[in-house]
Image 1 (tube, rainbow, N blue to C red):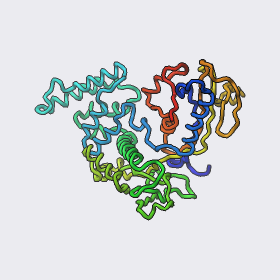
Image 2 (tube, rainbow, N blue to C red):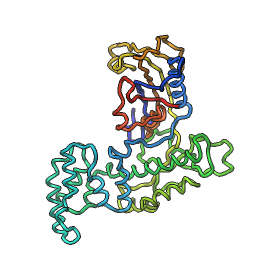
Image 3 (tube, rainbow, N blue to C red):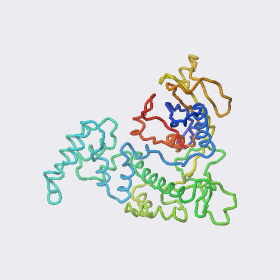
Image 4 (spheres, rainbow, N blue to C red):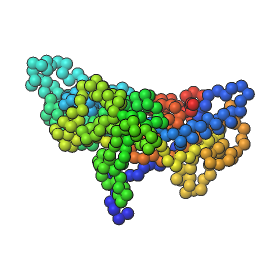
Length: 402
């Protein structure tokens, strides 16, 4: 390319994923297991292809401990100390060394009356920060920045939080925007369905993309325009795939009806107002939150799927690049594809037979394959759930439900 590739230039991501050890549940007596598997997986694949999925932000948006958005709440409220406390507080399932450092930090004022002796409090915090610096893990960049700052300027929590890189600080605020979006999206689907445009919806009438340029701007809001749907607009001119919800900010329009009211209600519960999104940008331009618009329904493109049956739990179900280079064949038979005839008549009622599915799809930027798979499988994608899955046997399986 003769042009520099910049953030915002991405047109999408392609995914090819193997789902192993699929369980569709027990087959009724006398039923053909092969046909049941084929129909269940065919219905699931065609549903994803035809209807898409609710365009939720994935769990990774909220951090390993699910509290990233809570730091964002504290920052929007101007509570730097609260934000630092959330980042530094004790977490679950960490190594003894890290857990011990967090516990030591939580107890740093145990022998000090913070309200009466500020100097003693600073001394205790400085001493603790210096003591635990080496116990912070390699990837604990936020904690390490905070501890390093407080070891030199104890009790200056605004400075400590500001020592975190801009991208990481912004991440906390974006997580809260995502939390609000997910909550309101659930409400909108529950009250308005996932197929029809409703009065009060926002529809995207300009996506901000120029035919001459495919990105290049880091502002997701730039060039976008929305319209508030009124009664006269319910004539088929708009579809559910054009309905958007805003990421809360100072430059966006909120939807009407109960979805718009829910934004206010959720913010009020967290002690936040819409004005706080403008204030944060005025106080720190690096954390400016103009907002954005995100489609409520995402339809993957180029969806393909194949149903596989195999006996070896480690049987490859799709070719890796190395297998392609070495021209290595995959022996697992394909039961069915979405566009082809059945390829194999292997008996599938053997108790040792394992079913799998290779699914491929393309997603636009900022849409999550984990969420697409959650819709396909109707099962959680959290690490806690996934860690219990096995490659064979009937202990937890990737179960596709109706």
